[in-house]
Image (cartoon, rainbow, N blue to C red; front, side, top):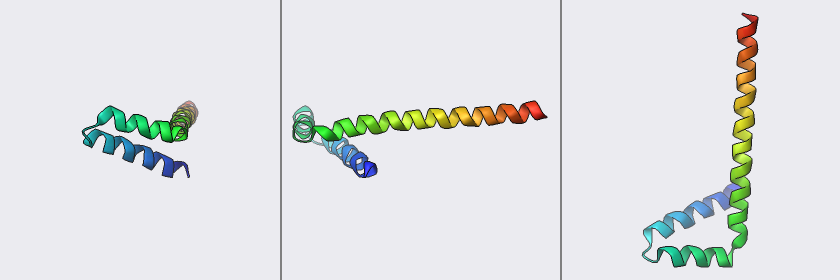
Length: 69
């Protein structure tokens, strides 16, 4: 479900960049569907948090492997 919103959001951005009415089109989309922006922000925060945790776990495992050897 989140990926669908992300795809829609990216499609809106791409379509907005290719259209001549740049600022007005994207603003009307977010006025009609404000939840898409909020969901995208939540998803991006969750994604960065997940990446940070994953990298931290990998670093911790690598440090343990180095300490053992």
